[in-house]
Image (cartoon, rainbow, N blue to C red; front, side, top):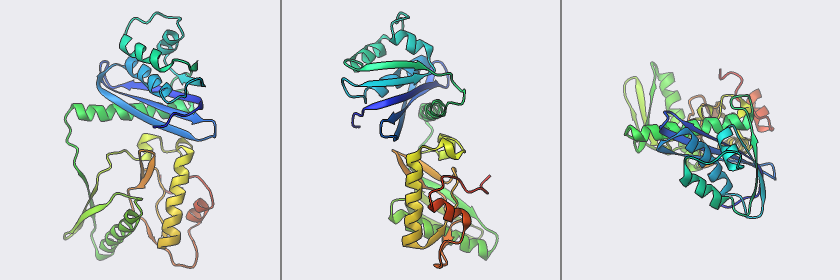
Length: 288
């Protein structure tokens, strides 16, 4: 990952048990207005270690002889980092902090947790998600190579809808906009779809249901995906909800084509879809 000059950085740590599986997360607001978020975790750790680890990961991406503002809800990290409190525990991480912070001006700012701050809430969710991933690994939950989706139908009309869903996903997969389908099996009243498992949570679980919770650069990707599918593939409508998209390594994927359909080629007629393509950030107003 390239080093970047930044104005503001939000960090957070989380632990499901203390000690236990934990996660850390960072959100960097660059000078050009873009945002960059990343996270990680450990199977056996503590909340304080994850709070500090998040800060270390953040400043490791700051250029030497540059300045940054770090926002955290950890009073312990701030006071120990600034020398107000003596560093009595996690000395290995504090040594790493010292190495990473050399020749960098770091300004620490306290932000109250769970107080409605957009970026604090974002890193809180990312850190918690990372902790849950570590918990799954600790419990030896099997991670399958492929993801299995089952569509149930009671009549031929619904069966046609299932076939259309598969067809549209295969089109999107050719553009790498969605997981690849490896196998499909139609039975009397159901269809089983075996597809690539990206092992990520949907945007709703990762960031939140509200449109304002989703980072701006993800909206640009979503709009680009929809525009290409509409203009090049004649797919007029896709259900744009936070549960139908996932993000992996800063790339957005569609994971559900259950309500998608082809264009009538006379122009976009769905009011919401048309509004979205014209620059409106928002979910389908009917998704709730």
